[in-house]
Length: 194
Image (tube, rainbow, N blue to C red; front, side, top):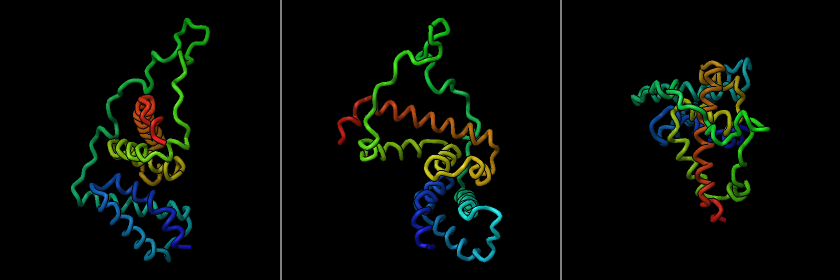
């Protein structure tokens, strides 16, 4: 059972750990240290939280300590950066004088089917680049919510942030990912990859 849990969770744990440390190798060590701490502390698990939440709390704590040791700092801009305006260009929507105000002026162009995109190595590479470029806290929230499937409450507990902060970080991260992917997919590159 432990081997199945280890296999199922380690990749998402690695992505989350990478949000706190400076290299992929450090993130791998954090995940390894986390699993060792879980094994050592299993007798102390009281069941007050879900087992997964308990493991991820250990991971976040271990990753934060490792990040501090590495001298990595979290820039204030990743927590409360300047408001860059709307996440979708307002000119793409119908105006108040239109019979259907607020609706799309024209629908966005059709993208490749999900199967085509999922099979594309290029899209995975691009997603990795987009995630790496996100501020650390946005990357952590997005990884926990959209990749690992944690609830908003769990993310708030794990990262020790407020629900409002979690929503803002998730919204900003999704907006960046959406915009970069839309530009990539609209360029037609994804249609050429089979």
